[in-house]
Image (cartoon, rainbow, N blue to C red; front, side):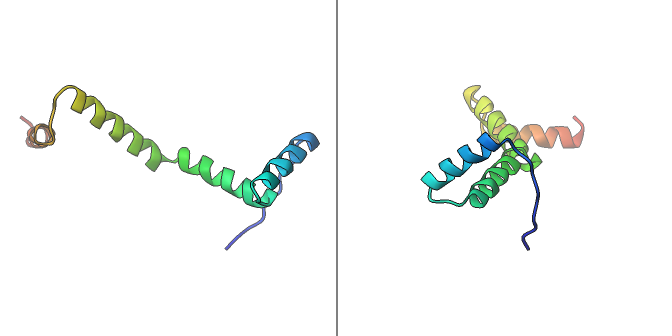
Length: 81
């Protein structure tokens, strides 16, 4: 279900957004929805956690650790040893 949101922006910003949206063959509304959706996705906790795990994975691989090494370390921590 779509809902309406009211925002106030500078006239020149609105006009620029309309021009740019038109160049992409999109309505201003479509472009605003797209931009808000991208912002929410990029700033969500899920996205932040995925990026963190991806960064950790790259770092571990550069240091020569394997999936088996990580699994052994997890088991040791869970056992408390």
